[in-house]
Amino acid sequence: VDLDSILNIDEIEEVATKQIPYKAWAYYYSASDDLQSKAFNGNVYRSILLRPRVFIDCTRCDTSTTFLGHQVKLPIYVSPAAMARLAHPDGEWGIAQACEKYGAMQIISQNASMTPEQIVANAGPNQVFGWQLYVQNERNKSEAMLARMNKLAACIKFICLTLDAPVPGKREHDERSKNVAANLPVRATTTTTVQEPQSQSLSKTSTKPKTMGMGQSLFWGTAADLTWRTTLPWLAEHTHLPIVLKGIQTHEDAYLASLHAPHVKAIILSNHGGRALDTAPPAVHTLLEIRKYCPEVFDRVEVWVDGGIKRGTDVVKAICLGARGVGVGRAALFGLGAGGTEGVARVLESKSSFPFLVVGFFFLGDWGRSVWICVANVWEIHS
Ligand code: FNR
Image 1 (cartoon, rainbow, N blue to C red):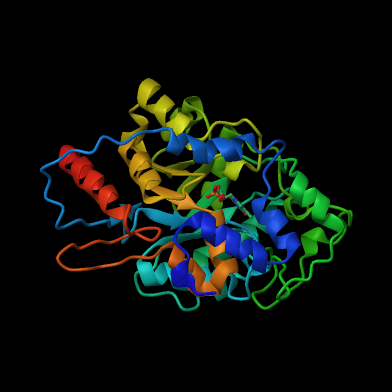
Image 2 (tube, rainbow, N blue to C red):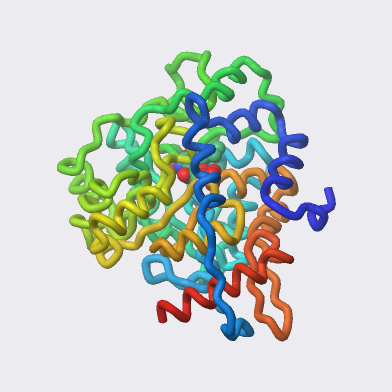
C-alpha cells in the first residue's frame, strides 16, 4: 500500500480492514452491545463547532506540551491497547518507533503482545512511556509486574490504572469471531504477567474456558473488587511511579480522584473506546461536567481524554475544553495493520514547511492549516 495515498484515519481503517485477519479486525473494531458509546465518542466532536478568529499570526505554532512534567512534541499519545501484533509483527515495538519519530507518548497495555522490555528496547533518550495495569485477583501477580516496571523507570514514567472495565463488555463482534481460525501474522500472546521477558506462555489463562472472544479471554483473572479506600494505598506500597487513573466517566469520580493528588497525578476521561459499558458518556461530556461542577479538578490533576479522536480538529476541541492531551487507540492499531511501523507513523505524521512551522497531526494537509489557526487563537487567548 502506498501510505502517502491514505489521507485520513477512516481510510487507514479501511486499508487495515482488508489486510488484517478477520479475528484481529473483530477484536479491534468491536465495542459493547449496540456500539452506542463508540459512535457517541466520534460524533460528539463532529457536533462541536469551532469559532475561528482572524488577524492572528500563525507563522509559528508549537505543538509541544508536557505530560506529568515530561516534554513531548505532540498533545497526542497512543492509548494502551492490547495485542498489537494481531495487526502486524512490528506490534507495540513498531508503535514505539513511530512515537519516537514524532515525539509522542505511548502507554503500554498490560495485555500488550510484546513484553515492556522489548517495547522500550530502542527507546530514544527523551521518549516517554506509561504502563497500564489491570489489577489481578491474584494480587501477587500485579505486584510482580509493578516491581518489573519499577526497574524500567528510566523509560516508564507512570502507572496507568484502568478502572472502567471491572468485567469485560459484551462485544458481539469479538464473541462471534471466537471460533474463527486466528490465521494471525505472528504468534501473539500477552507476555506481561509474571513471566520473564522471553517467556511466551500465559499462566493466567491456563485454566479458563476455551470458548471465549479475545476480549473476555484477556480479562480472565482481572479483579472486580477495586475501591477508592483499598486500591490506591495498595498501589502506593508497590510502586513509586506516579499514578494515572483511566476510565473516569463522571465529575463525581473526577473530583474524588483529584482528592488523591499528588499521588494521583492525572485522570483519563474514557469509556474504553465504547468497549466496556454501552451508553456510557463520551469524554467530552465528562469534561463539560467537570467544567461546570468542579473546575478545581483541572488545577489538581492533569485531565487527559480519549475515544473517537480522528482529526486534528478533535484534538483542538478537547484541548479547548480543558484536556491537556488526547489518546488514540484504534487509530494506532489500524495504522499498524495498514503499514506496520510506517503506518503508525502516518497516523502521527508531522510536517514542517517554511515559512509555516506546521507540525501536523493526522495528515495535516488542506484542513490542517485551519486547525492551527484555531490553535493559535486558543493559545493567544489562554497565554
Ligand atoms: C483498548 N483499550 C484498552 N484500554 C486499556 O486500559 N487497556 C487495554 O489493554 C486496552 N485494550 C484495548 C484494545 C483495543 C483493541 C482497543 C480498541 C482499545 C482502550 C483504549 O485504551 C482507549 O481507551 C480507546 O481505544 C480509545 O478509543 P479509540 O481511540 O479507539 O476510539
